[in-house]
Length: 391
Image (tube, rainbow, N blue to C red; front, side, top):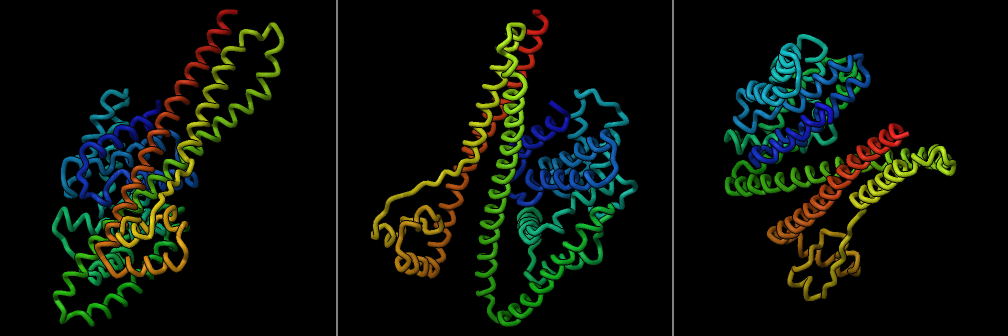
């Protein structure tokens, strides 16, 4: 297993075991996104294989310090955890020091000193140009509120983000300047529109303090649901992407076996290749089966009566339920749902729960798929080696 795969697994388990649930932004999803964006930059930038590995390794570890401390000084703690990880990986002191400096370069106001640090900075702030920027910003807002007690009104938050994006942040690599800067400015324009609407709303509600408290409470709950649903969706996309990679790789293996190896097995001199080829084909077929199962939609349909709808026992947000209803019944039920905030939250909680169950099944099957693929490749290679040595 490569050092990057080991790092990914180590960081994922570390976040799962030690990271507080209040970190809505600085978590494994943000880390994975930053790594993917760094790979995107380096596909269009001349970087050596060793430097590429250093950058990706630093990005996997750049936020793990949040598992032991708050935002202040987390980069230093992240570098320490990275060094502990690399202690048994046979890497030189110079290599470790470079990776540590790359982690420290992600400090908010640090000015990059070389190309690798520029890639680190751009990847870490790549969400500024993302279509999901609004969700990421709300996740960070909620995180600051829960970890540092920093609460912002809509106007204050939008002003803070606009000022940072326009006046304090810039992309450094040529690829990011050309491709991400225009997308970032689109997000700035969206924020400016929100600010304009927020100003009008604040003026109309400035004399109603109780209404403000309710709005703030609703916003926090809405943010919680939106961020959690977005995280679930991203996790599902990551799982599907991994399954598709395995499907493609094993489809190629099977096609090569059927076109190259199998036609040669009917001659006596190639009899020693029958068993290794069999192992390779079986492992590839099993991998494909489990990869398909992990991506296969699992739509449950629940039978219910009109009384169940009246008693609010049916989740109207799930299409597997409401597709059985007549439009008029669905229309009336949804209007009833929209009138009751608690009913809406109950429905969203059910939706989150069952989406989590689907994700759990998907990742369990994906884990089995990787184990089958890894075991099949190892056994097949050993079988081919034994077959040739026994000649």
